[in-house]
Image (cartoon, one colour):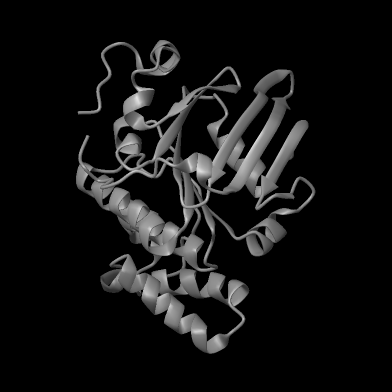
Length: 258
């Protein structure tokens, strides 16, 4: 595992919770996706979610954003119960940013036009819009493709654009759904550095899920293994891969991070 994360916050028990899921249950038809699940994200933390396909990682993101509602349980953001808040209020009032695995941008608009479209909704101050757009284009090194339609960008450029779009409204919580999927090694390293910098420089609390376990563990403070609708193991990357439950249901015996 490359040394992307220079430090890991270890005193989370002393830190304030910014997001908490308590006793969350959710069914899709007759299939139970989440079963009495508990999960907590602390202020300034990067939390990774791992688990087999169909285990409910994306469902957790959909519940947090308000796209779907739990059958049972409570979702708290900054100690406020948000179950009844619709998507747009969770985005604006509680400052949640979401980077989906696929899409998240307007294919026929340029990089600049994509950011401008969201800025016109999220930023009231007209003079500040252009400043924010220019800042994000520079931050994500998209200057060379500023006037290129998003549909013609590389996979890494598209991912950078979607993250930039999610940052327009200055989120406190950022959700990243499989950010490393189908990307080359160098692009993954760049995204890992971006994620860690968002934590250290912008104090954004982040949850990411991905099937690239080593890449995820390289940039998180803690990670949780989800199995049968529950969190079965949680801890720092080093501790997690030594956890017997995590090995049994996800990592296997031969998995290493270095």
